[in-house]
Length: 116
Image (cartoon, rainbow, N blue to C red; front, side):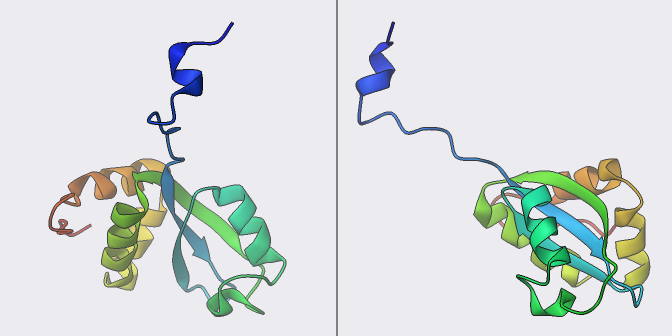
């Protein structure tokens, strides 16, 4: 049985949420990235595909990930995290919950966020 929305071209399927994730490199640096499928993207990183910053820097460890909303917001969060100090990034990487709390501080309109 189909519903009226099944054939309505005006109804758009809901887009997959974008996620922000943190990866530790072998030199102890923390890489920040965004993706709609973190496990797939992390597998690409481990296989040497994707970000040049991670190629040859393994073993890689996925530290934390959290949904950030749409791509635009995920990019703002990613930029904000990349500006943080190593110590602040370490605090975010401690758990998915800390990363989620940080993401929630990012204002959807201005891209501002509190310090971690």
